[in-house]
Image (cartoon, rainbow, N blue to C red; front, side, top):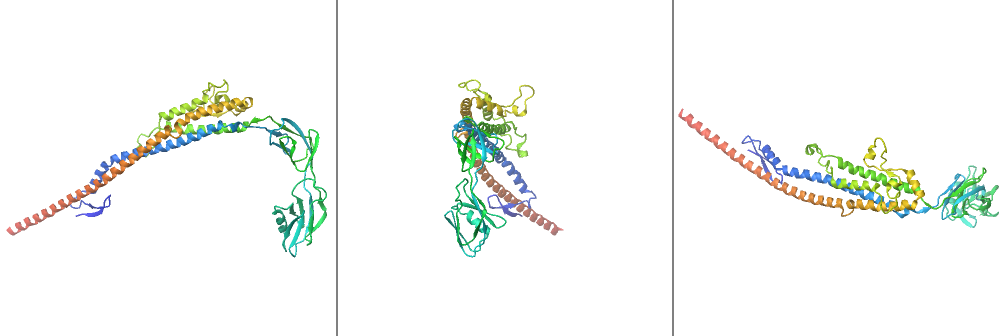
Length: 463
């Protein structure tokens, strides 16, 4: 006797054993388990290679980013010169350099700030549409408009010459959109509808800023002064009753803070990259990966290619360029080091080769020899990139390894697929064989029972 199920390739199979008393399903399962061991081995190899691929791809990407960061250190724009301008009291007078300016200190005294002219009006909501003319520009105000509607109408008009503000008592203040003394005929308003009634006491003529630079008096219609100090823009923010504000214009120089930030950015990325690679190199494979499920662990342990790369990268930090002058030939000369102690115990960071920036040393080097720092960084950057590119660029060592792994993974996938198809057919064949055996045993049992019954009948008749 037997029951039916569906085999691995979709054909009916017999689940036997009722006739023989054997657990044929378990027997077949055990036989197929042994037969599938080579497939399991290949699958484990495939998983290990895939894990290594992921790690190699991540390392390649990190190295490419690191090479880009190193190239930024060689960019001419990093050392572009500009003039710094400082103010002894920027809350009163602030300054920026727009073009080449005469270096030195300037004494700026502010006695008056520029402001705009304004007039005040009592607002009455119009009962009919009203056309208002301000400085020759017409504005239509709809019937029933509120004071807020009127203010919004004026302020949203890009062609208007004034701004409007509503006071709590129903007064509208119109102010020129530009500062400075424009004369007595300021803000001319024509309103035939009677919507605005002027409050003469609120009328005020605009005024110019009054200041002096090194004792030379001057005026400006704006609080932004561009012609007081050649190449410098002054912002007059407040009066200077306690005395003039000193504005200092420095000689053209590279930005120390920008260079420091770029070097620190490289160091941060460098430390992250070598830390990630070192972790892969130092992680040992687990003793029983197949039982622990850690097939991808330690796939790059002690990798000679990556070990050599790390050593080369670290050497570039201290190896001086023989073509450059002593004292400005390596990163160590501008304050970049592992921060290792000169005496006593070293830190774990310094032992790992992590870099550290002495910002003061870098600033001093830039200020005393900016051309030397630039030339050294450009030379070092090219050398460092050439080392990293051997592994990270297209067609490099990592690319070759990754492509080789891809080919191997493809072969493994084909092998596993072929072997699985063969095993599926073998399982079907085994099930058919055991079903046939079960049928023969069942037939034998039936015949044996019939012979036994016949024998029993003959014996009974004799008695």
